[in-house]
Amino acid sequence: MFRNQYDNDVTVWSPQGRIHQIEYAMEAVKQGSATVGLKSRSHAVLVALKRAQSELAAHQKKILHVDSHIGISIAGLTADARLLCNFMRQECLDSRFVFDRPLPVSRLVTLIGSKTQIPTQRYGRRPYGVGLLIAGYDDMGPHIFQTCPSANYFDCKAMSIGARSQSARTYLERHMDTFLDCELNDLVQHGLRGLRETLPAEQDLTTKATVQLSTPHPEVGSHSLPMRGWTECVHRDCWQGHGVHHLR
Picture: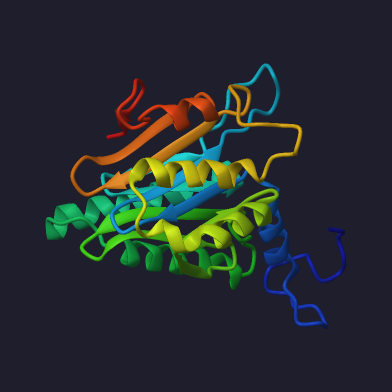
């Protein structure tokens, strides 16, 4: 995408009715590492690729813990994601302190939408260059929400964002009817298979393609697990295996 006379600020509209600053932020999401979210009747699962800037650098976390019943995966600018994650954590803490109950997932997503709307309409600001997949569990059951830099948000059955995510969405659409009745391990396997579709044909989910998993659960809270390869998840009970830990 190239600079032009209508992309100096987020309040400037082009003659075609476009806001280029928001489009640039959406492009940052498309360039981020892929992440997949899907849900059944009882669980919501996030799966993400952790990308390293170089062989000398550690992998960046792509799944972040918000509360015992909510986790997020990110695609885009990690710095913006940390800021939004801290805001979400503060809202969840306020709900527990003031109302003595967990914050409903839909309410938290509404607050995020309101916060991300502000930089899209004020002079001197820029939109948040990050997209989120929010997985949570409340009285209404499991949820998967998608948020965009444009401040739009969507309640999804399954979704993928990030680089080459269209291939993962195609896989999710083909198998969407089976997700509701899936057990947790089957749901994780579908997530990993969808994530595999975002990789080049000659690349596979091996120890070099580090995968991170997370699931919020009403009884045990939010878990995160670094997966060391496709085979380990398929042939083991990955949520009972070594490496599962609480994030709180």
